[in-house]
Length: 247
Length: 250
Image (cartoon, rainbow over all chains, first blue to last red; front, side, top):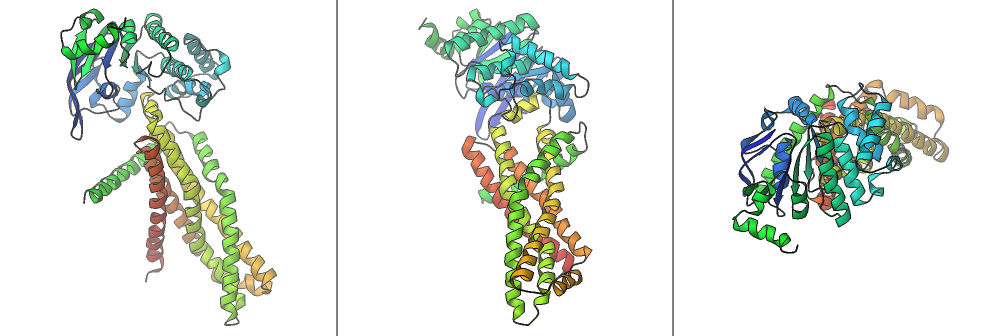
């Protein structure tokens, strides 16, 4: 379970998060919706300990991750996989080395080369990529393929929690649908807990078990997709209407 | 005033970064393959530029010394004075400046690009320390390879001076070599190599820091690279003065 309790964060004069509270039960997909610059990525980076809050805390499986430093934080991160907005694949490595990286590093010396290859190929298959992509470098892949490789890399060490930062940004509708299906499939097939940060309303309503709308540093609405849709908050109504009225 | 304060803050953060590098250097897992990779890039990759610079500066220094010594009919000292200047001063400083331009700028650009495209964040989320994985091998490789490249510079510089002195200026081989033995002793060589080692440390910490702390996309990476090269070059010259002053005094 992930618990975010009274989380505050400022950058200089800019107060990005102002008392965020949320709980993500194990095995669920939780989506945080919000406009550009609303602080979604900042919230996500607190969950994995990339940023330290000014006030408040984040607990993951009972461990207060916001307090951890050094080796303890490194160990706590072994429970996570993360898919970055721009995929963040290592430019200097081919697809095989990118996907194998977490396995090699986490289980350094304790995992056979054949086992690494088996798991890399298996996870690439989960995201519908074949062995022919293994020798390709990130610069030779399309945006959608890069996202899929990034997801395979996030899943390869069988994490309990997967964090997605804007997984569908910049993708065409077909690839977007594909990525949505992958998020749902990762939850169903692997039982992972997922936290998705997005401004894509359609995707959010498709993959979410629970959903929150982040606005002006606080959660303007929180609940099941249906509860959020019924929210009376003016910003939430306006934000959601932009998409629902088109349907 | 704000800029001065920011500069001091940045310097302070870089010192903390240097302490972190030192701490991570001795923690497992050790990655010799990454150190060798960086030694190949920083060391073997710089052989051509250092070799060319060393040869030509030795040739020029040999010609200039011949021109000066001719006034006193002391051309036999050309070999000795050139070798002395090379091993103590020219080789470590010029090597460091050349390697900063070639490898230091590449290090900052690579790490800066990794920072702004979230590759460094990604590495952290995979429970791998970016300082240990990316920075430590570059620092160790620099500290190891700067002295090696400095020796190469000295050897080729002296060879260049020998060709100019003996074959072009017609200085007899005997005095040329004898005065070299008389002028240069092992302490001079150690002095130059100590400088090279210190320069390797300074350049690698500055260039990795500027990349690691890069912000603001491609422009930020470009500015970081420029600052890395400028600050490293100044730091080399200041450190050169301090080491020389400490060694020989006023």
